[in-house]
Length: 559
Image 1 (cartoon, helix red, strand yellow):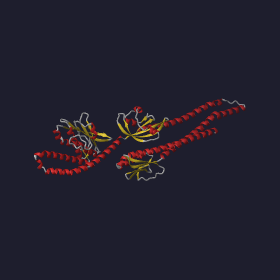
Image 2 (cartoon, rainbow, N blue to C red):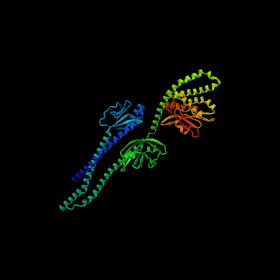
Image 3 (cartoon, rainbow, N blue to C red):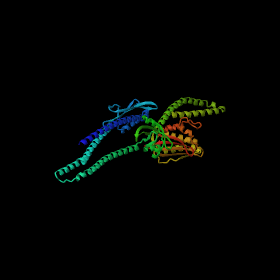
Image 4 (tube, helix red, strand yellow):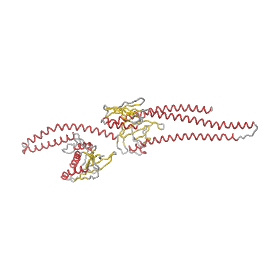
């Protein structure tokens, strides 16, 4: 008992010291990790809320806040923007419910981040996280440590007692019994004394196997933990890869291979060239935007956050990559629409001011019609009337472009509408010796549209195609149903066999006042784009591989 008590006391003290040091280390690490996660979550929310707050899109702001309900450590979120407070807080059942922004914050961690759009602060977001999960995890680990110490103590007592009994006490008792028998004149056998050490070795073997089984159970637990980490690593939506200080890729997940177009083997040997390794290793973990290059050479915008970790004894950087190319495209589209809206307001004002003097000029020409009908002035009169007509057409287009589009959407048949448009332009096509080919089938689903405005779109497109088609050419009108972004759309194309667009003009086709056509105003295609966008659609221009131009109008299918 003295030997066992001494060994247990020393072992317990050592395990308590090491357990205490490990507990404090884990406490610092988990607290630091919770702080970093809170800061990163706040920064990501500020980035995600920038566009909705700028647009005062309260529904989208509420939707983004509700999406954080799955992040259990978050106890509350408060967004201050545009003079209004948007907030979410956990109730007694830990449901994420709306709040007025006032709730108990004692004992919670919090982080603030400004909401910035185009370098201008437009609001703030504050995220509160609870340390309860970290504290619970540390309590569980402390309990496991105490249980481990007790298990080791009991096992040590059992092993020491058994070893001493087998090796020392039982042989001594046998010797004592044998000596007592001899002293009494008996003839006691000494066989039991000889068998003692062999039995003890067997017990020692059993004790070692018991400890090995305990270690095996711990190994299985570690393997299961590693498998769970690998499952999470492979299933997240964000691309993740791990690189060392030299930029060598050590590991990638499936999303990384999908995003960059590499196989796993290619990704581990590719030079991705991502920046920020030195900054991350220096302790400056950061979030930044980076234009990455896919395996096929195409560039796309990403958002990268970095974390430092120690793997196999050396410092490595974990990169979390998000594809924000669509967000960048939305930002560019938003800026374009703002610019077009401002231009529309300007041209509408100019057209309104020009219209009145133009009416006066037309009235004067009518008043002097007889005086200008002489042979000497007739040529000048006709030329003057032609110029007035051109100014009148330009003024009409300017007013139409600058006036806000008002539409009433009703589900309708695109096939029926295009049949009317083709019949209307049949005489003009025949006069130009151009064939109009309508290849649209009868099985297309309806699309929500303002029939008058959509008629204007296809009138303009077919007029343009007729003006650029050569004699004996063909204009083909086609449509088909496609699925894009998880939604059904109708893609309607108008193709001609003319010269097509110049390569440098493709990005400017829908700009106001841009035209290569003599006597054109450059507003027709801009008006087409505005009407299609008001129908929640999109219009694009391209060249056919066999020559000629193709305009594609994408419209949503009625739900």
